[in-house]
Picture 1 (cartoon, rainbow, N blue to C red):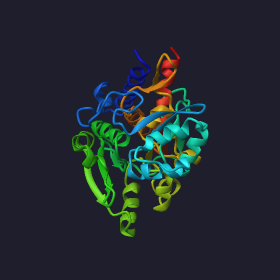
Picture 2 (cartoon, rainbow, N blue to C red):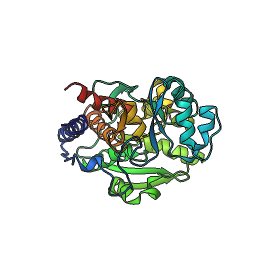
Picture 3 (cartoon, rainbow, N blue to C red):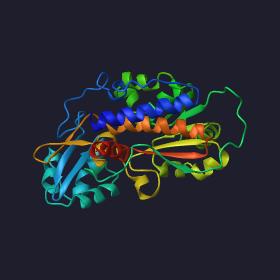
Amino acid sequence: MTALARGAEALAAAVEAEAAGLGSPVRIDRRAVMDRSGWVALKRPGLWSPNRSCRLVRAADGWIAVNLPRDSDLEAVPAWLGAPVGADPWRTIRRVAASTPWRRLIGQARLLALPICGVGEVRAAAPSARFFRMAPGPARSKPTGRRPVVLDLSSLWAGPLCGAILAEAGCAVTKLESARRPDVMRQSAPGFFAALNGRKGEARLDLADPAGEARLGEMMAASDVVITSARPRAFAQFGLPPQVVFARNPSLVWVAISGYGWRGAAGERVAFGDDAAAAGGLVRWTAAGEPRFAGDALADPLTGLAAAAGALKALRRGGGLLVDAAMARTAAGVAALGAAT
């Protein structure tokens, strides 16, 4: 069994055990939960990710993963490299990277919020999420048998998968989207979006409106679980950093899905599933010592599983916890399962 298969098995088993402990058993299909090929056009992984937005590139002293999924990422390439690019920006990227240390490349990328990493730069002993105690726990009694209320503020794959699993476990999940910036998967992969969100209620708020911000705070205060995938600065801008939200809702479980972790400078670093998997070393290596992608955006579904297991565990503990589910760290923990055999 590969490290990837062992990781998926371990995380799925953790979800099932925690759900059973809450009296809401679920069954995770290990293969289906990792596969979105029925909804998204994909190609074989290699130097390029299956969706062809991320490429492994040799730097002067190692390898980096360069992910350019958004128009704004492509526009930032000249600033990142300090060089003009022509019709094929990847040619310039390969040329400049070949003579530049990888740490310098990712340092410059961080300043521009580009999802670029060093292959294997993150290490972890296990793929499980981390917990931070933010409040004492239950401050109000909850009616026996009441379904936990979950507010899913996340987008793309990892967070929505976590919410889908919680819905399967009997939670009352509402997917809340920004009226101005809805989840891009709704349009780009509607079938996949429906598969992840079909069992959830839906709501929209204009978060550029003070009334929308106020309503967001009210909804977070009334929830048992909040799932997020935005960086910490977004909630600080809304006046809703964790310390404020937990003061209003001491029994909350805040599931914070991020690229590299919630706290410190890592919390402001951008990542997506393919580059985060590479950062964690969840790649395959050729006989020539070159990395290749091992699958499609692997850090996303693995982190969705880790986040769901963490959320269920935190609910069992009574809340008051921030569940720190970092994609690169999850991938590194899964990669470590292979190194240990």
